[in-house]
Length: 262
Figure 1 (cartoon, one colour):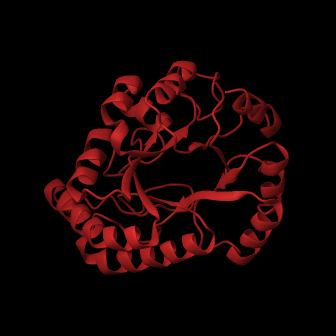
Figure 2 (tube, rainbow, N blue to C red; figure 1 turned 60 degrees about the horizontal axis):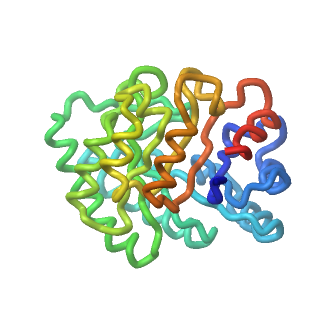
């Protein structure tokens, strides 16, 4: 069986050409969905026009940016920014926004780990903010996908680093529009046990990201058995989007050929 809902991250793939030209390449290579990171630095009107003309959809983008979900002093600004992101998602006919515990810089670096705030307070703040956002997401029918990130290689200092913690927050909110984004790359680095974790938490997994370890390259370049991971998702009747957020080992054409064979 072939995965049908594949999204390609045009922040990391097709970087051989300017950003907006990557959308056409995604369409040319058979993708029905694209995703990207920040939206404030993008020409949203142009992206919308290109996507409509090519009949390709935006699957997701980052719903937060400059403010931290874990810092109560920034909660008002965080909520305001996510509200704007939801409006932008509606405008683009995009159904998912990715949320993080900490504000991230251009290259994914954690802007402030907030060591001065206790872990208990960080969790408390995350839950409170997401409770406030839940009815807004529900009304807009835009799913907020909370993502745990690895803190060993790419996002040193990030607070949310394990699946069980992201799941606990989402379960406390108890909204059909608050889910987790399960990133296979990040979680292989942090905890392994991918298949058992997917089975345990499939009900709250709203989005999946794929890249191999080490290197964050295409499947087959590292240690993860993606055939078994994907087969598990199919057996569990996961019908959401699988996003390929990876850096091609050699070039985009070769990476996409591997993706399209999954």
